[in-house]
Image (cartoon, rainbow, N blue to C red; front, side, top):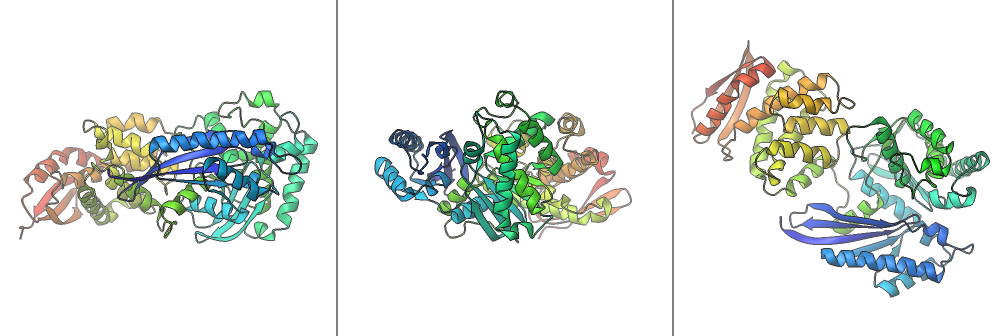
Length: 509
């Protein structure tokens, strides 16, 4: 994997200061190789005039210098530092940014509310395949609300309240009483009333960014014993969030600190954050919550790394090919050929299987990624493929779809599938077992037809006649290896599909 460069992104937020280091390859692929944060609570460090004391300025400076050292350790060629609401809302924002630049050498950019909303949207829309909806990004000192249609921003606004400064204003000793909670709700309702478009598109999903909703996701997953530990693209109902708000608001700070999944440094600000989130959800008339693990920092990276085309046209295809490029030991020619063969078999057997909707997409993804496990070890590579796919966050798929693709890609036998399937019964339907077996068997046939990795099959068609599946194969060269591999699958394929494989060969040119 030829390394092109490494890029450090620093987010000087109102609640925390975060660093993410991205590794970029010559092929255009990228991945996160380091991430760290400092819980700075900048919104609490501002005095009544919105200024930062020298001791606090030194604290921020020391944090940024530590982050610079980490970037230097990783060999980052570029570092981009952005500051959000805490610095933006200060009357001396330009002076603070200039002072930090002089002390650290970093060119600190102070993002406007509109820029923060745009970059948060960019990070999200490149990671979730969604057409229309709301985005709500609750930070420490501001909340960005955005309406998008056809994957483009329609309206946006930045409100000057977030989880930290709302707690500072309405809370006491880490708790908020009933009067304070009602005051927060009124504050949010009044702000939303000045932006009537927020209530103009009911029934759309609400995509949540930021620490408040990510923390809620982790708490809910722990409580449900959710079987796939991925925050990104997790979905929650209105009732579920209502129940958690009531439970968390009714608990004292020390009780909240003991809740599994709720970090101690967020236990005091989770309630004001949820009150903001819940109120905006109700005002917007949204249908449900979708959690995004990608947001502002990702958006800043995409704008830095891909300035000419920062937004992807196809989230899933980009994610799959990025993952492939991060595993260069996989032959791209081979998996592309396997995918073409698999999809041809799937299309030819439409009447036999009757699958509709996105089922073909699952086979498409599985065929392209089935061999990535070899980058860990050739032996039992299918086991590594399963783990990598189930934990690499394939963007553009729901959690259930990620599991389906991973299980199809790594399918070897029903016996091996059963324990893996059982471990995820909270996400998979009973009918999914048969779907995985049949598509997994179909993928095995496609893989067998390029066992040599030389793409000897020029054309392929399949037709079910009675209890036979006749494969009409036209090779472009000798394919003895593929023929033997295919013959070894006959018995298992028959069990999966109830069809006996019969090969009809056309003469090669």
